[in-house]
Length: 83
Image 1 (cartoon, rainbow, N blue to C red):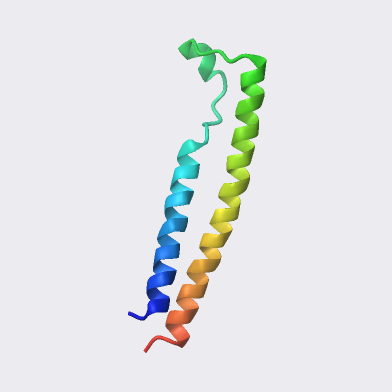
Image 2 (cartoon, rainbow, N blue to C red):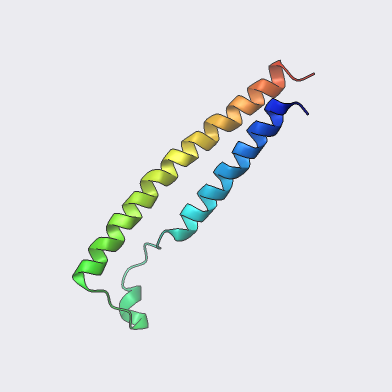
């Protein structure tokens, strides 16, 4: 393994861990779960949850695109330069 392969592999693992953590931090989109469990939210906490969820959703998309591009680059490198 060359140094480039090791560096790209480490970056790929970091991207995958970040994506996993971001997806796990997002709330589900089930309706009225807070009412059933007794955890009804106030107006302010609902808006805060939406802003956090939108932030996480936006950055999850960014990291997913980066992950996809990195995988394509690694495969192209392995196909053309690895012997």
